[in-house]
Length: 279
Picture 1: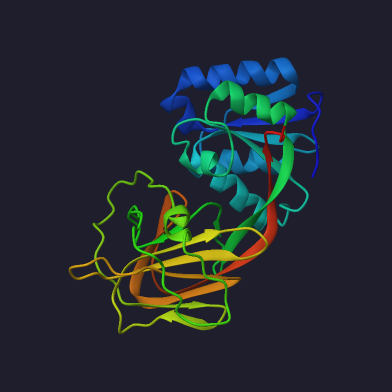
Picture 2: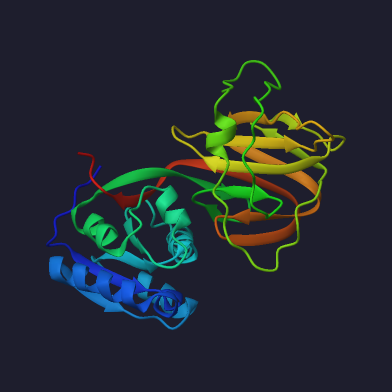
């Protein structure tokens, strides 16, 4: 765990969507960061300029001012460059703050900027799929908000750790998405570490996968309910494979697919995020 001094040199990349969404919060964040450190400001006009700025950061510590998409884009770029191990990212969330806040970043621009200056790097688990995509916070199939469950989870096979309280706590926070079809039953095979949790003969309403701690992802499968609500199925493991007919999925704030098969593996401590120091 690294602690950062306010004298660090920063590269502050301000996502164009943040400037459009809330220019006042962007201004406040810039003022706090510039007052507390040697900050170089970068205002890219699109994804290509965003990538070039991040790639040319040199010894400066990168700070993203933007929403969950901007944060996920930065992590994906560093992952493809094989630079996540040696880079601690900071973010001041502006716009949709749900992803950053779920990771422990303060929601307001002043508090978030102060965390950039005075915080510590924490290594977080990351989901990496077989197409080299990354997931920071939550994965949902189909790509619609997953509602919390009231029923107790069911242990679907022995030899693993199953938890009675996880159904409520592991469901990812809803993310506003446009042009996403409504949720409907899907036929999916879900395997965790090679063990089948649900097969194609049992329709499901939703599947969620969340990076946890210690190199294991938390998986919640919600079978299709008829009448009384069906009991959700929970599992934990290092690899999750989903197979089905042309399904789409939501990774953080982005919808991907359709695909017929996708495998995600957990990269333990795969990336570093600067968060407020514990007091």
